[in-house]
Image 1 (cartoon, helix red, strand yellow):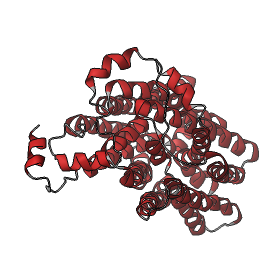
Image 2 (image 1 turned 60 degrees about the vertical axis):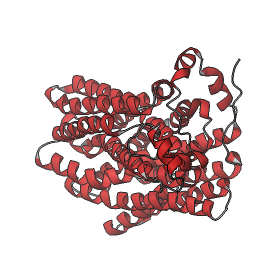
Image 3 (image 1 turned 90 degrees about the vertical axis):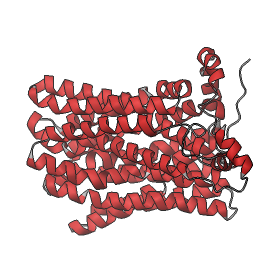
Length: 450
């Protein structure tokens, strides 16, 4: 009320910029999120040697996260729509960090028991992380107008590359100096601390003590859903109302089906870099784990830069009155074309050239990773969490299939060449899906069940 009175007294009051602090917090959370996913890849070679696992065994261990992450998407989206983004994301960070820390204790067990416990803990991390990206999308939809949403989504999404830049060298050094167990101890502790910070500083747009009415009006006028988590009078109605009629409607939309197919393909690239890429550097290119930890950060830097530039380029096109459809599709198509370049690594021997090509591919993957901006653009206001959950469900089926398929390819051929072709082909399919299936990008309108 005080903000409203202040705005009425001074209608020309300069709007605050709290929304950029909010996206900074999303960036931090997503960095730790992806670092915890990558712990197993950095420690993977050491774990494989200690536990005597084959490439196929490692593929299944890598996939444990993905099984649970996919299963948890719709329940996670429903929790977000029911309880709001702040609480659900905060508890998600806390719980996945505890399970990350516990993975460091797997070394106290032997043989098959250790493998089962490691798989189970990775599974629980995946289930706990399920609400994170749908929650990020909801926060961006609430805090940002349409013309800034591409940049905001790109910032938090680019954290997946920043995580590898910062944490890959750290985790490689921990593995080399103290043992792979300490990777999980340190990352778990960092996540627990971050969860407490999130719960302390995050608020809804109208409730945040540092926003003024000018900023709220700016967000709302630009299409931001500032009241998404504040309609407390509708909580009881939300509890009684089934989400399944909405889900059925979403699954009938051709635009969304095309977006889901493309996201599966793009996520295949993500999980190659998150799981097998450091192992590829060690086993396929003869590097040490310490070298792999540092070298893996170089493509990640390029991915980070690509992620930021892709979102900025998309929003730049919007400001030039280019249609939303063209503004979102253009960076995605350019980025995926660049990602296909990784196949060239099969035909070169020099390590520096392999790193350069992978850096270009990673830049392209980042530049084209605008899926969450598209989700914020298309999700119906009634079910923003569930819509994001569906998108992430389809996309992260690749977190299950990618590690396993690559494991079988490497085990059968003794080489990573086929794996790189498999990953590059997925980038091509993503392009075809956006070109020929998605069509016009627009917000979905649902029929509310009576």
